[in-house]
Image 1 (cartoon, rainbow, N blue to C red):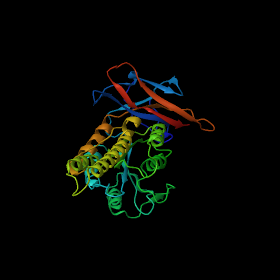
Image 2 (spheres, rainbow, N blue to C red):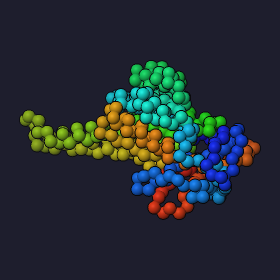
Image 3 (cartoon, one colour):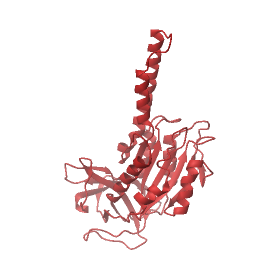
Image 4 (cartoon, helix red, strand yellow):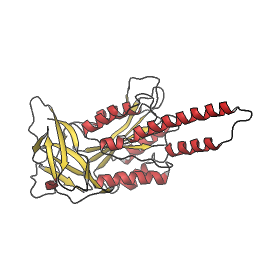
Length: 337
């Protein structure tokens, strides 16, 4: 989420104070999970809030609200054949996410297109159907975007991690009261930085869970398996056959490692990774519904800080008290006040 959320929430607990509209709020979002299931029904008493490592009262607490303000940034890798038409259908998001969650807005970005692979923002956070339909169409046709962000590495496509960092910076809008999430769609083969560390750190600092969707991974596995079963080439020596097989295996292992690194952004940031066998209408619907389920089961906690002069950076962290069978995902970020 942004550096400082400003607004008012309707608070779920009678023992948790409320604030007038316009109060400055420092908030963090998180989930509680046990055996791959979201745990709901917890109260503020089940958590401890730490600010710069010191306990702080929770004065804002929300859970299981369909109108919770959440900005979901959609980040599409359009390099090569990565872009699948399955997710680039506004109707799927409207019917499986926006229709039942009035507090959710979408931002649409893409990267990896010509000439330099830079990040393009097609639209900022909105629910407007015309703006979103135009944004999705712009990704497919690679038309001019609302704003282009120079990633500083000309000639390289699929700058995955650089694009994630830049999109996080762009979406951190001061004054927004929305919790942020990001769905990043790519084959996981970067043309720039090959490690997700910097992008993961940026998402952790901002408290933004990233949901990486790995495109084409299962097809690549099938292609490798089929190539291993193919007979040797006509008149090819046994040595040459072995050299080709070793090179194919090494390339495949490198690609697998890159895809695994991209998928790891889920665990590293409090999100989860998706790896569908094929990105079609059905699998895209499943991904969107999983995101919607995460939104429905989001907890939000925080407080109204005393503004500093000048504002300084603080670390906010939520911890789960008891419930040893469960674990908390997300719930930490940096806030400036």
